[in-house]
Amino acid sequence: MAFAPMGPEPSFFDALDRHRASLLAMVKRGAGETPAGATRVASRFEDSVGLQVIPQCTTRKIKSNSPKSFKKFALILKILSMIYKLIQSNTYATKRDIYYTDSQLFGTQAAVDSIVDDISCMLKVPRRSLHVLSTSKGLIAGNLRYMEEDGTRVQCTCSASATAVPSNIQGMQNLMTDAKFLLIVEKDATFQRLLDDNFCSRVSPCIMVTGKGVPDLNTRLLVKRLWDTFHIPVFTLVDADPYGIEIMCIYKYGSMSMSFEAHNLTVPTIRWLGLLPSDIKRLHIPKESLIPLTKRDQMKLDSILRRPYITYQPCWKKEMEIMADSKMKAEIQALTFLSSDYLSRVYLPNKLRFGGWI
Image 1 (tube, one colour):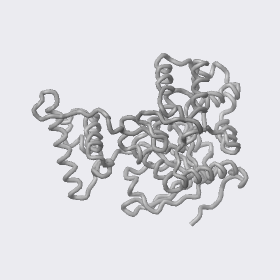
Image 2 (tube, rainbow, N blue to C red):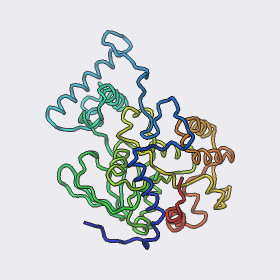
Image 3 (cartoon, rainbow, N blue to C red):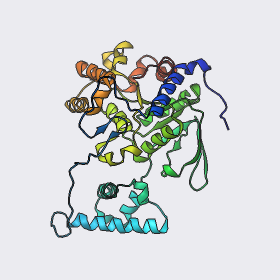
Image 4 (cartoon, rainbow, N blue to C red):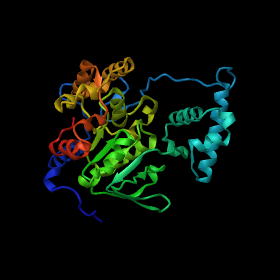
């Protein structure tokens, strides 16, 4: 069943339709994003998947008779026994649930998180196969409906009250959308502002997602599921700063900590829609609205520029070099200098209509 059209005239989506056609052709070829003349880098990076564990990776041994590791060995056995019971009873638990079964024993939530990831990596299975789920923090809005595993029907809307990202992404069934694109928004405040400005309805049909900063596992799984199911263009809206770029890279190429599950999490076809460092000069954003790069920012930027996947993204590299040369960064909110609704009324619609992504 189709959704009722609400958005702009059909010609608005011409650039998006052409972009989607090129993505579909790439999917059909089974190609990655290696530009002409580039060579593969001998590293943990695979251009069609993202960051991955290499066969020769360093491993650690946890021994029951070693004073340095016997406690962790015991905790691994404890969590393995809990996972066994979950699988036997066909029930699920969150990492938070596991921690609170014996918080004094585990000490911290981080200890549980680390062990669950280690077990998943060791057994070479996704976390869902362990019947351990993550608590979702992300939100989704727009042109999407689906049915949850328990039969609950969910219809996302463009209203101010967004839908929480489900905790069981694999359990989502009967996904339906007419969306022309998916927009990942870095920050919850920007996401809410776009909803308040009616942006989602104004450029409907579309889907918007936010992971509220560094994305949780379920938000990443959702973005991957939507790409795999519908093959619609996916764009990111992040701050023009090193940490916004880092978050975008996590969605696109993955993270080192979850590299063993990259094929379930990454969407290498993601494009950077904004805020681009070059936009700051192009739109004449005043220096008073910008923020100087800190030493920590500069270190993060240098780190990203050295990563193997930047070889495959010369336009991204150029934008980051603009930032490095100016020694300034900008939040998305800097666009309010032009007008309070410039982001939703002018900036994003023009980017989408005229193909202003890289």
